[in-house]
Amino acid sequence: MGLAAQGATLMVFLVEDSPAIRARLAATIRAIEGAELVGEAGTVGGAIDGIRSTHPSAVILDLQLEDGSGLEVLKAVRACVPALHVAVLTNYATDQHRRACMDAGAEFFLDKSSDFPRIREIVQRWTASPGGAAAGL
Image (cartoon, rainbow, N blue to C red; front, side, top):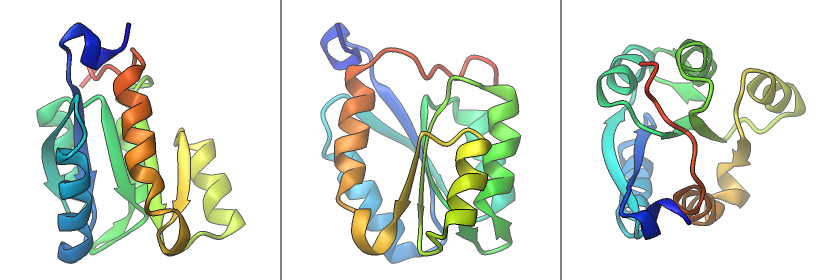
């Protein structure tokens, strides 16, 4: 039985430095039954602090942030919460970036220019599957 069917909610934290893209992603997440947007950040420090304080079960993560790399965020939170669902969404969809993110624990690595619509499908999939608990934060 999925999270939505059990009455549980997938708690999603959004990390994106572009206000316009962040607003579009937030609207997408809010429209998904069984998902709740619990926080947003546009910087490495804001993302790490926000994820630690909100205990999400999933993170949508931009690779290039105002003050550094989403890879820093991924490594910091993955060390605390191995079961956290993570999808990286980036304009820097090179093979090198993909390998680095997947090696650091991302489940998905998406190109903003072509894969943006997949976020809805991925979050819906996460709402239907147990796991991704953030108890370690």
